Length: 424
Image 1 (tube, rainbow, N blue to C red):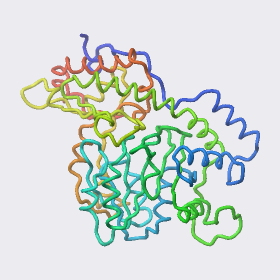
Image 2 (cartoon, rainbow, N blue to C red; image 1 turned 120 degrees about the vertical axis):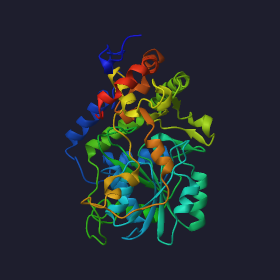
Image 3 (cartoon, rainbow, N blue to C red; image 1 turned 45 degrees about the vertical axis):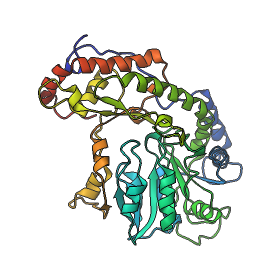
């Protein structure tokens, strides 16, 4: 086997995998229709936004959906609609994208970090229970990587304490828990349509709910505080967080092909999980239906592996770091994010009191989140790649690249100190 590409050898794969986002003529036609309509924004009857809301709500089996400018905007609207005010505490996972927590902070609330289940990387009901105080007003459950959180245990805890659950579904469109789509299980569901997400218009989001009264508040908050369907008075404070007609038109096309894309990604993920499970030190996060039969569909935003550096050791002590392993994979032509993951409580805005925007928070537990962040390797859209859409013939190169790195681990370990801190 030849030398590693990271150490000067030839890369195993030089042909690119499928890209993400994906599009075809349908997106071009949809954009042309909006251009020709000369109604490119705003909220009006018969709009692309209204049509997308109807189609998304039908897909999720909820009565109300409101498109907004981003997933982060959706979280802020959801929190405000639920009455979150400065000083209120909201329980959030210690492992999630930082926006889950900063949406709370931007409203003056206090994110309270609770630990994750190490098997699923989602917030656990027991950790939420330990985090609740007299100031707790809501819980945000994040369906990380497309894996639904345990909505049974979370619902039980939240119900006991009378707390609403906001589902952060940024990475889980298409996932289902006991036959119900994520976003339809809690009090409010929030989706993101940013570039890496399962359907995308570059940016965008949606807020969904079963509650009629909350739906009215949500629609008003995204449109300057105007009541839905009323272009006149402004009885409450609101933002301008509307979505453009161009984005809504693209999202309608993307939603129509979601079912086929989910099936293709499930096939690719199953192949890689099976083939890579035999490599020492690389443990695929279990296929959801094998792990928990209550997970009836997976959005497959990413395929996650935990990396054991000790199995990639070429010396008596120590091992290859996860950063160097990821860099070695990318050098071989395998798209994988090189950014080190950071647990939310360790972000400077929460951990560094000298940070200009240091914000109040509380950490109940984060040990599992920190351990996961230090060992995770992510393939797929999380790395900006459509790799999971490939057939097994192409995906076999991923397996061969990992095997090549493992075979050359002795050389990689010895050269590790010379490679320095590798970042994207």
